[in-house]
Amino acid sequence: MTDRIVMMANGPSARISEALDGPLARPCRRNEFASDRTYLNCREAVRFVEAAE
Image (cartoon, rainbow, N blue to C red; front, side):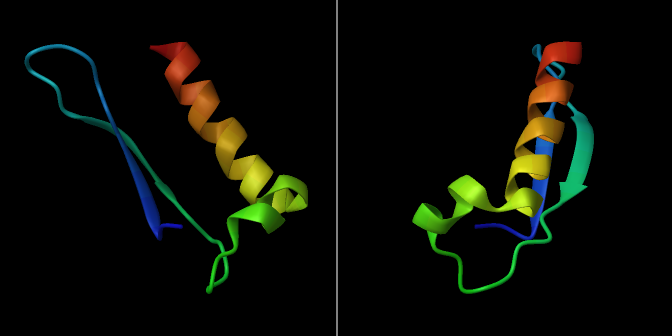
């Protein structure tokens, strides 16, 4: 899906708040991600950052 996930801070002076590496193998098949532990860990990390802001 991606090599890097870059999250932006909110507001008119938005800046990069955090960048996460996307360690998923290529080629990616979305229907296989539902049970992929690496994908699920990345997804939880993004949700944690969203909840913290």
